[in-house]
Image 1 (tube, helix red, strand yellow):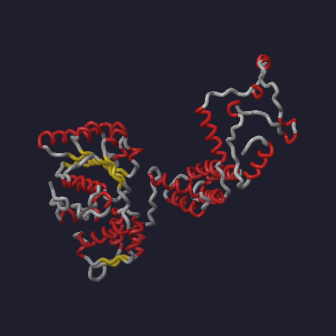
Image 2 (tube, helix red, strand yellow):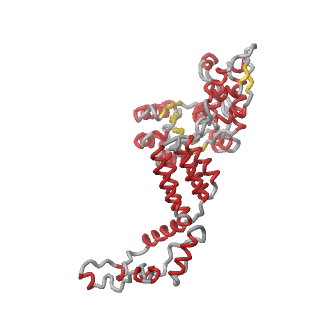
Image 3 (cartoon, one colour):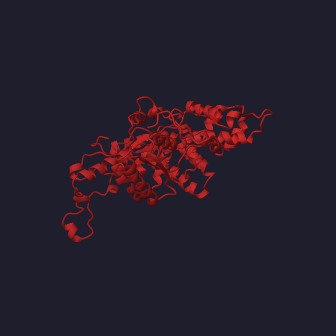
Length: 442
């Protein structure tokens, strides 16, 4: 077994010099690996596992460029395993079964472990994931899956139960800075030149916690920079901007960023913070989110969280949906912003939402309670003879177009579902209902 922090399997200088910078400086020992201290630090799960000479199937879940592939390779090197890498986009069950066959042969003939690393494992369909189950359970292969998507949603439960899920975190400023320093000092090409970066913080900001993006951006900016007379280079902020073209927005329309950002947006609206609401909306729009998705969520919020405290909120939100559908982007952003700031600033009440939730709960938990006879429909003489509709009082024949009578089933006749607040327009609704229904406590 190789030492935990050393390796003699790194490619030679000639092979590495033709690769992109991110590949040239890829760590070849765990000592060189930067970041994920919560997994690789002293006493942490993966560190303890490999110190004990054990290796279990696992899912590495984290954003791009945080070291998922590198870590898988280092683990394979550490236990001297036969390493096979498949990409879920271009590989299928056939390729998986070929690796499984090799794994079984390695274990039977050579007593050697086989690691199957599947990049983007969330793109494997159920049948492809099913093909892994037996071999993972028996241990003929060690599966290491890498995913940027939440495995709870994208990896089948039987495979999850046979694997350990480790969450890798986006690299912070300290980690990115260390990776940058290492690239400038150990790369066979860059280490021979005097390279100055005018705004390191800006370079790291644009990388979005992604080491690969950081190194690719550095390499591109360097290519765009005219060398100094001594062969060195000073990379300016404009060259960094040119290399990246624009600020990178970390947003995946189908992944956790999608759900986290829309959650932040809705909670900002509910919390009456228009500034936060438009910021999170801008993040979504800049990341390519469907503007109709945002408008649709505001229609829901207008009833759920504003409700009758401002009845115009629902009209505003539905008009927004229609207008966004008519005009499209980029002008739709203006309509979305108007509606978001209105909803965030509106008085809030969830009384209507709570009313239907409580009523639904009673409907589900209680027997099918009969409709009181006096409010049943009586279109035939037989029904009239059975006293359907008898003693029904027609509201419009009474003062204020109201008469007190029972509408709920007998078992629920004193139940109150809708409890208006004293906020906004709902205050007037509460006062009117209290005046009409003197016997009810609202």
